[in-house]
Amino acid sequence: TIDKWVKYLKNDLEISCADPFSLVNTLGDPIQIREWIIAKLPKDEFSITNAIIYAKSIKFPLFVDPQGQGNRWVKNMEKDNEMTIIKISDHQFGRTLENCIQFGKPLLIENVGETLDPILEPILLKQIIVSGNRKLIKL
Image (cartoon, rainbow, N blue to C red; front, side, top):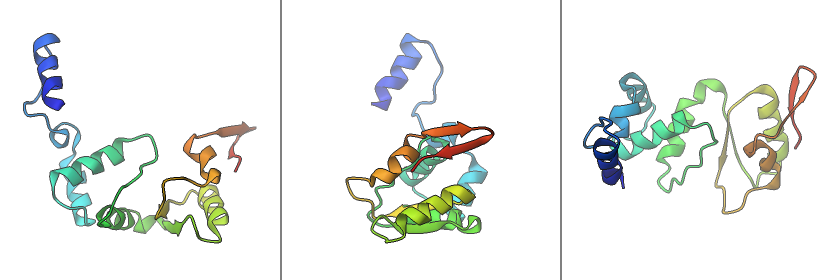
């Protein structure tokens, strides 16, 4: 748990650490957090912590979002970037995915089940091929 980790840092490694530890206080930017709240992110610490993890992550985020709050927040955050919203079951899924990658547009895939379409594998694994001065992903 976090309490054990904080004790280990303080006692064993002699590294100062906030007690109680808070990811919001450590990595959070108050101005960014305020922008997130304006974009309909709930004000609770759990939601803000998850948003910080989302923002700092180098991987693609997966939201387990039964109430739709994260979905609404992402849509609000990306509305100026012409985000495309699709479901894996859409008949134009592959074409839409390809277009978003080609034109650098954000893509939100809704209602993802327990298994992913194999077309997503090279993207999620970042299997980028360099050909000359171009970067390609083979779908």
